[in-house]
Length: 317
Ligand SMILES: NC(=O)c1ccc[n+]([C@@H]2O[C@H](COP(=O)([O-])OP(=O)(O)OC[C@H]3O[C@@H](n4cnc5c(N)ncnc54)[C@H](OP(=O)(O)O)[C@@H]3O)[C@@H](O)[C@H]2O)c1
Image (cartoon, rainbow, N blue to C red; front, side, top):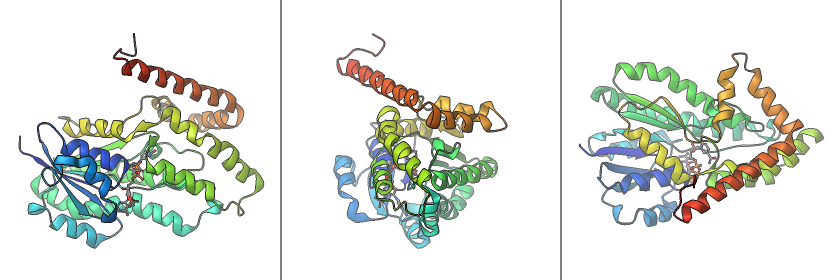
């Protein structure tokens, strides 16, 4: 099998870095990875993690998804501009009451998460269409199909990505191209840390007392616990993504976190859309103690199963 050229965005940390390293270290050397980041001053951790694959199966390049020229320069630097697999991963979060966010902050999220993908495809899709081959893999989110309290703009940006891809997938099929949306639940990365820190520092003076209290004493209070109980590692998400890239018939959507699937299933269980909203509402405002206890229970179960793996036993033993 010929080696596939893979371009990944947002490789300075998290899922992008884990995926770039995993693919570059593939034992069968099936991939040549172009690991890109907007700020090359942040390349040291990737270089270190890449080890011997650096300069062989992994090259680091500059690419800012908010800058068309930077995308063009990067793609032009790749032999024959050939990208067999594009992984659109770069992204950012935003939490809090919308009264306390500026339109510019919201536009930056849309510009990165949604228009970033559009810019990449405007540059890369025509070549893929000409060759009638290529796989476009997008790191979306469960929030691309279901909104969550105080994630209004982030969810909107991922919904935009999902709508855009659903539409494009029909045309892609005509050109024999594949399109896959990877939908992780919470993942413990820089993203989680940055979003939480920004939430903690947020000026809540524009919000009424009840909203500010809800954000601080319900949302932020549970934030860490949700990531600790349900969170995956970047490496786990990378593993799922590689499986999708290698699949003969890759699915259009793939959720990486089975612990989260019962929540997203609610979306499809009620065509009116009331069920997930009602359940989230009750979980957050009426049954918060049960919700918190369930998260602790899941955390304990996961800790125990990891411990038994560490001891060389399977979790079922
Ligand atoms: N963590 C989660 O809970 C979670 C859950 C579901 C989906 N996701 C999605 O997973 C993707 C990766 O996030 P992560 O969790 O791995 O977070 P992360 O560690 O913060 O990584 C985000 C990456 O995107 C880069 N980036 C941001 N703006 C960019 C731009 N304009 N051009 C190029 N790169 C840019 C960041 O670069 P800098 O270092 O320069 O900022 C960083 O390399 C995102 O699309 C995110 O929405 C994350």
